[in-house]
Image (cartoon, rainbow, N blue to C red; front, top):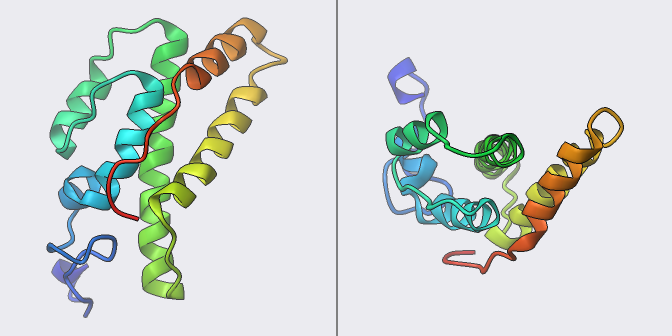
Length: 142
């Protein structure tokens, strides 16, 4: 936004420790990385701290359809919820913990998986089992 001439504080609204950028938010920021770590625990992949390495990882997921779809869906949800939290802090002055954001993301993923039940019950079942097999442990900041 600064490059567009918009007057904003350049500091990351999630961690308040570094200049905000796409690469910082996804996932160099300690807040963003904490959420991504919780999500990747569920997907059984190793979280990457850089945007480019995460993109490369998403492009080369050597997983079965259910695992690949769940991982991509989870990555998309993580990007969405981090950006939403960032905007809520900027525009509404509301702040949520990583655990709180993960609860919202978790509900979104469950609902999306449930939406596949009628058209593809096997896929839905495989994705739901995968999502519940591992419970994430909270990492860093709140």
